[in-house]
Image (cartoon, rainbow, N blue to C red; front, side, top):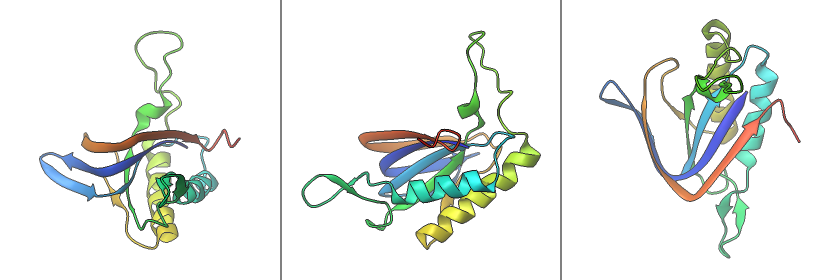
Length: 150
């Protein structure tokens, strides 16, 4: 699983004119599943994401996690994170997980995040065309890949 984690002061996702999810201060997490992924990949990412110390403490240092600031998380499925542009300028998505494999892992990942955070997680809709709006705070943007745990 591959994620882009952005520290935000607010974020929302709109689907067909309806706001499906909205958060204030917290994390926007774009996530992509590949066919080689398992529930263990989602669990590793969950623990990493909720414990990332990327929020400022009282001295201005990035020492606090989303749990510690009681922040929110908005998760958006985004298969394009597994795009390959090595051979051409048109992306290939052959590494992106097939929906029958990816959707259950996405849903399990959302449930794992909610359990770790101790409250519901805002989401988009798997496979839907979505408009995502965000106010990136910092900006702070990190890429986490469960296949590269270094």
